[in-house]
Length: 261
Image 1 (cartoon, rainbow, N blue to C red):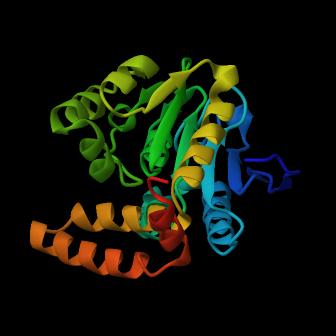
Image 2: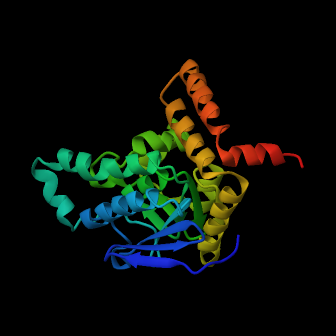
């Protein structure tokens, strides 16, 4: 894939660069290890919507500025003020929509974990489709340490990634999981030196785009999401619908006709 000049935009909390049909989204609060605030959550959803609506964007990478990916929720922000009774509503209005958007996006979304990820930072990574990690990465499901349960979808995504027993170990004990063990457990696809991580994530996106088509990748995401919540009959019915629609696309026709040539 040829290089072209990228474009970029930035809020105070999130930086967006578009390069070679890839949206590179950087959590941009390095001084707090990119701890999530209401502003950051809103910016992430806005960027997801923006990228979804841009036909020139076909993949996304989410990473962090500075020495880490995301420390979870910023416990010194207005989030903590929600403990008085409105916290459930706040979670439903601000946290839950983010993981729903990640999971339902047409884009393949790669989390590039460039250092520590904790609490909701791990949940954010789990909401992405694939995870790459720097050798400096650590994953800490630290909710129990502050006397709370999991959020941002981790109770659903984590056991599906590593199994229930390992999820209980991480969630109940809050022990750090290093990058190589995370790879061995199936949480992380691959591990790279920190300075190579972003390039590796861009290369993975390029591989996805050159080996398939955006409609096919989007359809596979839809299929897997539905299959996680239905029986075999439901999955078969949806497969038939998806396949019937995809074989009519110009991209699929070209790939089928050229296959094996």
